[in-house]
Length: 317
Image (cartoon, rainbow, N blue to C red):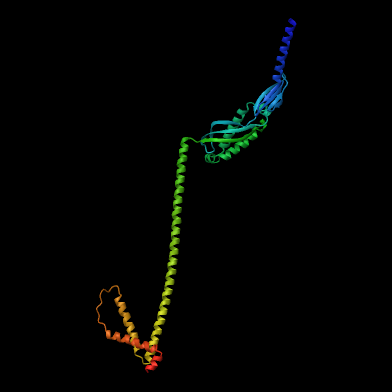
């Protein structure tokens, strides 16, 4: 009876010890993590995600390292720029551990080391720039910080993927001064644009007046040419009429002279009647002379265009 109870205790103890050994030997590493294994205090290997086995009581887990990309906030700090302006700056660092063993054993307190290295380089990079450059060249600052910090942290088995400056806050009085400067600059640009607009308008107006004057001069020249041509044609017609009348008179036809005089007489009366400064005209008119002149015109027309004799005229004769 005593032997059986002792055997049962032994079996129970053996099973418990086996379960304990299995529990200590089997390690399940979650995704995104890596565990370092130390044997008698010395690093031996790194456990990858999944089911892993170690030697119980000999090997132990040294560190559980997060292999995913991590965001590390950079607290606000005061930075003096190249032109002696005091600004408050904060930011964020994105990093990822690539080698769990180096991240564990090459540096003590990885996050604190990254944070201090980043803050130191922020003061170095931003302190070498003017305030205007600081506010306008943020991408350049981020690139320089990333290049320096990533190069310095490579021996730690990690990769700094991004460094972003979140906020750059100058003092209140400096912000007010910058606001006044910006307003003055905008007023200056507005005045320049207005002056440029007035200049362009004056130039366009002068160009338009020039073109109008040119077109008007060309119009006057063309009108003068047309008037001269019309006067030339009229003079030619007048000369031809005078020559015809002169030939008729030379042939002894006095009626042609009467026609010419009557025409001038009628034209003179028309000009007097159509004058705008004449309201009423009372003057004696030699109606008999005018009728005689009209008769002379008819006689002249009969002589100029003799009628052809037809069959009826022959019978009448």
